[in-house]
Image 1: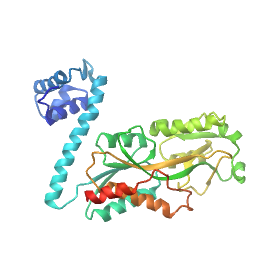
Image 2: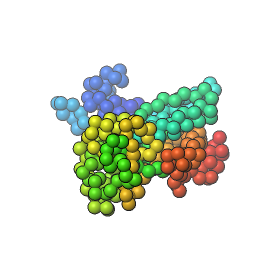
Image 3: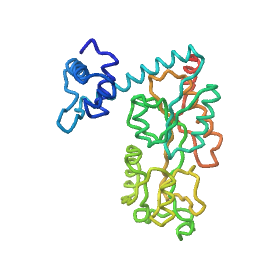
Image 4: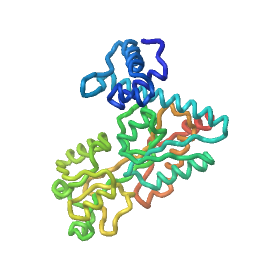
Length: 322
């Protein structure tokens, strides 16, 4: 491999990948385009692989280029972390926590994370972002976020995953629907009436598991509407588009209710994720606080702690690191 690889090479590669143009990337970096092209050639020669497809319409990544982009971003973010952490020690201030959360996550957990961080890191700041679980996991993996609250499982096996709580997933329907008068919904009505789901792109592994679960009971889903947040789902249910699925902790519109399906137990696990390279010992402590928050309210919304919760060994490592 090219032994002279430096952070400037990585920054140049990322700029070209994001701008899809050598010219625009050179302007962004304020360097001459021939110099930029030479840096990219050095990387490609060192890797013995073409990273870009050049054409008159622009520049795009090859398959090896897409793989290298993940590592390049991660290394650049780790460099930034190191600089900020060192500056933090010298100034006594804490650099911002870049924190993400799924719109489907219980907002009480998000509030607990914010409150806990401010208590553990006085004067600390949080830069928050709401996004789908799949995208949040990608952002944590490549270093754009420090941690996130997501629906598990996620595809990035290299991440630290702390299961926080587990709760039921129920069918949301209008209160004036005749079926709302029963105790549970019959399986026979689900295929025709369950029309509103979160988009698969938001949480592919959980979505596929849900489809398999229904298929096990002979129910083939045919959703017609896909949403990205609980509020959108409730709106569509209110206007009569069909039934939807929501986590039991979701705050409901007064015109709506939630019911279970007879003979089918649907659950979702909410987890706290961060990267193993993270240097903040406060993160496992936040996960532990959120897990305790769930344990304090087991009868309010049906949540319970999963068996894979943060262990005593995790906390011992936190104390040692502190």
